Each structure stands twice: as C-alpha cells, then as structure tokens.
Image 1 (tube, each protein chain N blue to C red):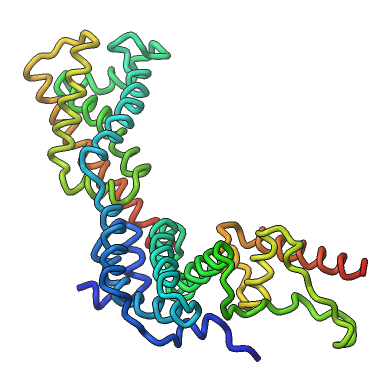
Image 2 (image 1 turned 90 degrees about the vertical axis):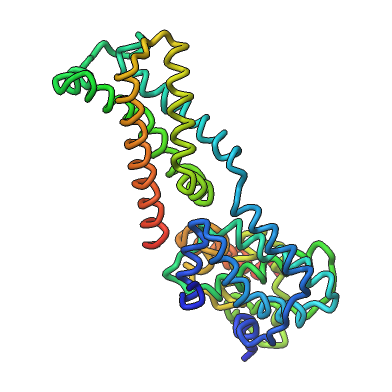
Length: 170
Length: 172
C-alpha cells in the first residue's frame, strides 16, 4: 500500500505517527544515505554512527518537514549536517568541499585573502555555507537552520558584512 | 564548476547498511512511534485534570466557579436534567480530549484513537470518582446520561482534533 505513495506523502503519514510509512521511507533511502556516507567517510564505524544519527534526527525533526518541498534534499541536509557535526567532533580529515567565497571581492586573484569563515558565529557560518556552498534558497536555509526565511537572509547578510569588514581591515 | 554535494548525494551508489545497523535504527524509531499506552494515559490524566479544573471554574455546581453565572446550565436545563447532564459530560471530557489530540505527539493521539473505548471508559470512571470526592450526588440515571455525553463528546472531539492535525500536516 505504502509502496505506491510518494516520499512526500509518506513523510506526512510518518509525521502523523505511522510506523509503516517510516519503514517504507527507510527501505527506499537507507542504501542511498549509507552509500553517500561510505563515500565520504573512510571508517565504516563512523559512517554507521552518522547513518544512525541521521535517521534519529529525521525522526526528531519530522514535524518541521514541509510536504510542499521534495523529501530527498531535506534528507540530504540532515545527513550532511550530521556528517559535519560528527567530523567536527572527531576531527577526522575527509573530503568535504570547502564553501565557496561568499561574494566576489574586487581584487586580483593572487591578492585574494583567505576567507576566515571560522571567525563567524556558528549560525552565520552555516548560513553562508548553505547559501554559497550549496546554493540553497533562503527558504531551504531557513528549513535547515530551523528559523524563518527572513532571519536566514539576515544571517547571510550580516556574515557577508562581517567578512567585508574584516577584509577591509586587512 | 564543482559538482554540488546534493547531486553527489542523489547519485551516490546504493549500499545496503549492515543488517544489525538497520535493525538498531528501525527498532529505535519504532519504539518512539509506539509509546506505552500507560504513559499516554498518564499524560491524558494530567490534561484531564487541567481541563477539568478549567471547566469546574465555570460550572456553578461545586462552588468553584469564578462567576455566579448559570447561563450554560440554565440553557441546558430547559431541555431537561438528562440533557443537561449529557451536555455536562460532553463538555467535561470533550474539552480535555480535544486539548490532548492537539497537544500530544501524533503517535500518542494515534494510540488514544486505537483504544478509544478503553481510554474514554477510564477517563469517565476517574472523573466520576473525582466528582464523588468533591461531594457530588451520583444518581444512576443522571450518571448514565453524563457518561454517555462524556463518551460521545470525547470520541467526537478526539476525531476533530485528529482531523485538524491531519489537515495541518497535509497542507504544509
């Protein structure tokens, strides 16, 4: 029965507490999540931990899912967020793309300074990473950061201002 | 241009997770999706206590009402004492089950709906017991009318609250 439903319909059923809907979603997407994590993380044990954390986070955040958006990108944002958290904790070196520079600065390539995203508060840093690294819309950033689209826009704007300011000081 | 990580995720090779891992994840989620019924009843009892206290605050019968207005009681009494008791029961249990269906987690509401007769019988029994403790006169015919009103009101508002939840999730 559930096999005929779309991911988004299954998510609505899962939000309403249907265990079968979760089972179907898990059967459909667990291999993809695991495959992605195994590609990103060398250690199978760490990949398993992140995999588990991803589905537990999915459960915890399911009430915030909006069925008018596709399910897979949402699952991806959770998976990636858990991956980054785990890597921060374990300080393991893996292939995670460095976010792109927020905005082109008027400067020759050889003079371009390192953008120090680490100086930004965590929420602003994540917002910049999602906006310029993943090319997310403000709505998607808001969903990821559990805030409003207007606030997501503010976070990015403040971060860019800060980066410009710190660049000007140099 | 660097391939987006989302694209990489979507195109990732499908690798089945180890069976032990899948079992662990599924069982953790299933436990959360099937809360113990006694735990749900405990939460319902708490909500019933609050909603019951609120309804007693406007019912003149126990002398706890904020106002001396007998408006609702007079309105129901014009149709007879049985109708009044029916309405009283429906309101008393209906309000708490409506609140419960909107406040509890969806899987908890689902558990209440799956065993609706059991939980409403428990709610009605405990409420009547509480009324006796408060000094209410419990007469057989009136009690039956109250219990019937409570059962019907409780079932109706539980379904109403559940429909609201379904509508809310479906429309987002």
